[in-house]
Image (cartoon, rainbow, N blue to C red; front, side, top):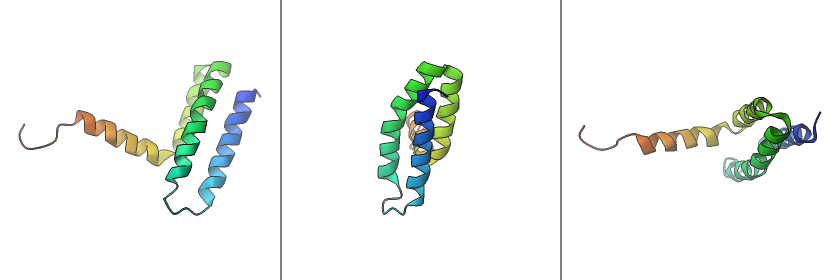
Amino acid sequence: MSVSLILACIWALIANVLAMIPSGDNHWRRAYFLIAVGVPILGYVTYENGPIMGFAVLVAGMSMLRWPVIYLGRWIKGLFTRRGAGA
């Protein structure tokens, strides 16, 4: 197993441990931390193992951080959706 995949597995383990600890802000600070650390690891995995493995790690990370992904999707949808009265 490559170093990048080992780092991705450690990231996943840390994400699961952080999810088990109670939080007053619904884990948002931890999610920001995990995103900040996970994006470079994702790039490293993609660089070392190719785009297929990078996509697999991306999907795994998105499944763990699903609420930030859901809110990002809603925000992007809101940018392209017309709001207000009229057509």
